[in-house]
Image 1: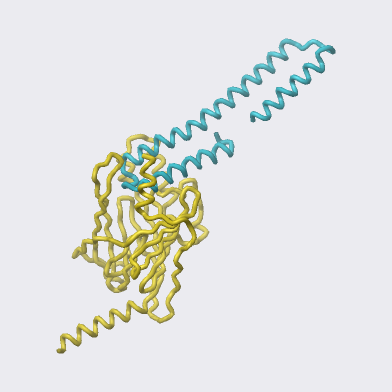
Image 2 (image 1 turned 135 degrees about the vertical axis):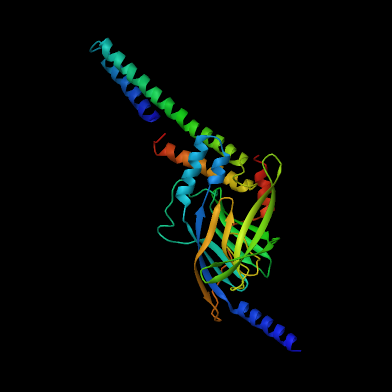
Length: 235
Length: 98
């Protein structure tokens, strides 16, 4: 009986905590195109990658969330908004606003695409592998998770893209930077083949005054699959 | 630049016609003018070649990037970056760098 009561109480505490939680996280992009640079063999491509890395290094992004929704976008600061010729590229960059709704199981990515504002809708479907490794990021205890995303390269060969995340169960919300989510805690660090995104500032509020999350509505709608198929015609 | 060249050529023709009866044009002056026009045409065609070269360079670059797996299968991002780099070429051309 005691056990049941303890389980019930911990579930209730966790549930009420996540129901009232809201917050804001600032992330910093640490771009590392070294691997990519090593895989291209002409000097001009290497020079372009060096320039892209230089111009997009240290860009800051902000994640705003409540218990059910989040938005992720580039932080508006004078330094952050400095535009070079290569800051508009997708390579190593996150552009636009990503809205996530866990209850509706959907993400909406609002961004400018070939001069037009679009809304790319997708469902949330991640198959994370939760690992036993732990580390501390700031005052938060973090656990490691791995995601393997399969894709076909330009020649139709099957490839795997690896994403490593450090999430903290201390903040039990399933959100994170870029389009990564669905872990049993807030993602504080994310690493891909092009570098990392690291949390630098975390503000959490457990009051009922939740932050308002705005769902992007302006733009022509596409599904992620639809957009990929459409662009596949160019190749 | 083309307009300027056109106006210059027109001005030259009108001047020559108007003054044809009043004096004989020195052959050296004529040679110099022809040389000047030739130079302008060379500069103009070099600009056009450079402009084309920027786009060709972007094409080569993007093919290299895609083949090296830079976009990890995200064709939409690759197409957009390709177009963005073309915009950089256009901007360079408009600003007179090329």
